[in-house]
Image (cartoon, rainbow, N blue to C red):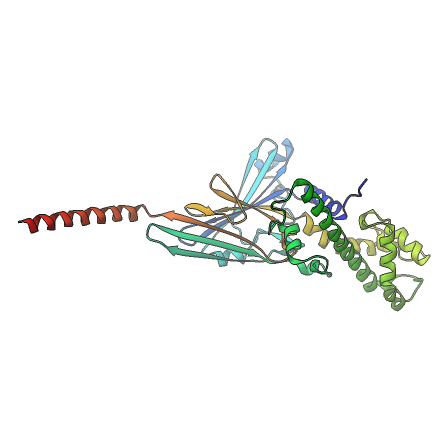
Length: 360
């Protein structure tokens, strides 16, 4: 039986952690004809009847509005709460004079820092309509990984795996798609393995002086880096499958490094925090809803539902590079049609009037 991909294991773990630690979050951006824009960030949690009653009474308000770790509501003034059964939805909103101002206060965090983005809004007058093009680019988190993903695959393959673009599977059968995905999964596993090991090894080197009676000197430990990695990989192609503590014990014939892999120890807790910065990226998933003025005719990579455009803003999409959301809409000028019709009627009238005058 084919082994489960390390990447899939990592992604599943990240999604499970995300589902346990933070409620579903949604980001909604509304662009207005005058260039102003609104932004809402909402999330919902499940509360017991006693908790909901406490919410409405105003008891312990700080507890009643628990912010998910990925939400940053600094400077978001308006808020309201809706209750549907046992689900409580909290929404924070703010209006901005420009999309540039809006991006200075993106209400999302990743690994404790505000996600950075930049946006533009282009407006073109076309007589019968005005065309609006909104673009927002979220900055990459590639520097979280010491080993670049492009060391393992070319640009198009990396982009397809993490963003779906360009569509490398067009024209292939289901069997051919599955084969190519399996092949891609091999290099993804290798890249994830290498980064996990790199993070563990760097942390151990940085804290080597905290190890009582290490079996080798710090210099020797550093020199053995590749040998240790080869030994670990020989145990399994999936780093998450490996009993890492026992593997180090076997290689060095010593328990000296056990504290690094004990979550209850200070060293182990620090290592878990370091690895979580990578794990959190795979678990970050915020639906992005965009409302444009007028009628949308080009949603970019989004999907139009009931006039709004839906995108997937995920940590994975920020791995290969900056991730851009863009859409174009048109606001029809009814007055332009009326004026045009009046001009045509006037022109016909003048032609008829002049023709009648000439006949006289």
